[in-house]
Length: 109
Length: 117
Image (cartoon, rainbow over all chains, first blue to last red; front, side, top):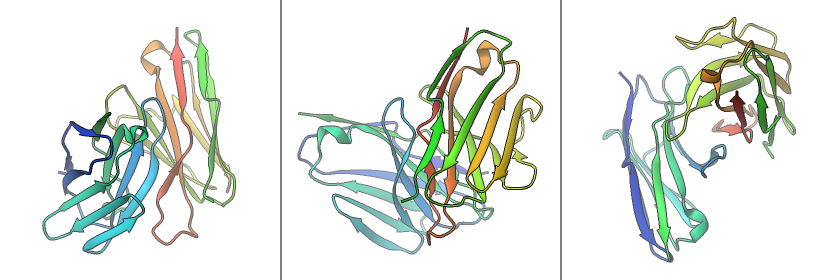
């Protein structure tokens, strides 16, 4: 089957760094997306990895290891507005995104 | 770029009413749009994939006669929840893929919160 494993909830301090890990199993693989979803809102696209390695985009970076079925999202210089759920979504061989419940990130002052 | 507009943002109506939700790609042509449903604290659940000019592909367990999808143009897909009941109350979200983007992420509308009394 296809599944995604992320921590349910994480807490971090404003200004700090946090890493959200994701392991996945899919039928085929066409890249992995990270989305941010604030409570009551739709997801917004953050990053995409299809090759192994680190992709950096401002305060956010995403890493992928295809052989390990592993990705992480790294958030630096945390701000209160970063409090949200972060969704790891690999794309399977049919180009469908596989969604888990995401990681709820709580930022404390 | 890649803006998706969804309307209405919130609907409250009586049981038995049919509700129509629109999803528009504003600055690109989307041959494929997706319709999701999300219950509180749960993951996004894909309901159907909407392809312009052809019938939608529904996920297992989703009633096609209850959730009517029309994708009549490259910028508009509609989801009609027919004869809605309280158990249909949920957050409905559409997304669209911009073929012009290399990695083809799904861009989401703002969602529609549907409450059936």
